Image (cartoon, rainbow, N blue to C red):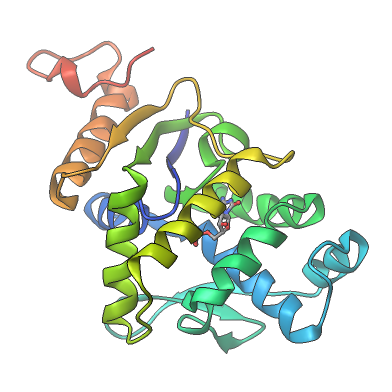
Length: 240
Ligand code: DC
C-alpha cells in the first residue's frame, strides 16, 4: 500500500487546513495539487493562451516548473518558474482560471505525472479532487471531505475578508455552486469520492476533530495494524 493520504473534496470543505495539519502530525510531505492547477491557469492567462487550447496548454505545461518550498517559518510556498506565486494564485479570479484549465486532459496528465512523482519520493499527504480515484488508487488512507455549500461559502467569505479581498457572501456561494458543477461534470477525472474513501462531513466540525480522525485512520491502516494488535481501536481502521 502506498504511503499516501489522499484528501479529496470540493472547495471550502476545509481540505487545506486539515491536510497541512495531518502532514505535520505524521511528519509527511504536504502537496497542494490545487495550487498546481492555479499556477497553470495563472501562467496561461498571463501568456494569453486560450484556456481550451489543448496543444498550447500541453506545450505550456512542458515548459513550466512548479515547486513547493518552505519559508523560514516553515510555511509552504509555491513557485512558478522560480517566481513566488503563493499570494497571486489565491486571488479570486485565479479560482476560475484553475477550474477551467483543470478540465483539460493535457493539463491533468502533466500535473498527474508530477503528483505521482512527489508521492513516490516521500510519504505524502496530497489534497485535491482525484487523488484517491485517479492519482493514487492504492493510497493508504482516502478521505473525502465535504460540507454544505452554505458552510463552505461562509468559510470562503471569511477567508477572503481576512486577505483583504472581501466579496459578498451571495456571490461567493454562487461561484462555489458553479465550480462544484464544473468540477463534478467534467469528462476527465470528475469530482467524486473513491468507493473506498471515508466520507467526512465537516459542517459544524472543528479542524482539530477532523485531523484527529484522519491521523487515527492512518495509524490504524498501517501494515502493523494487520492483523490488528491487541488494544488498538477497531473504529479507527479503514473499512474494506
Ligand atoms: O483546491 P483548489 O480550489 O485550489 O483547486 C483549484 C481548482 O483546481 C478547482 O477548480 C479544482 C481543480 N483541481 C482539480 O481539478 N484537481 C485537483 N487534484 C486539484 C484541484
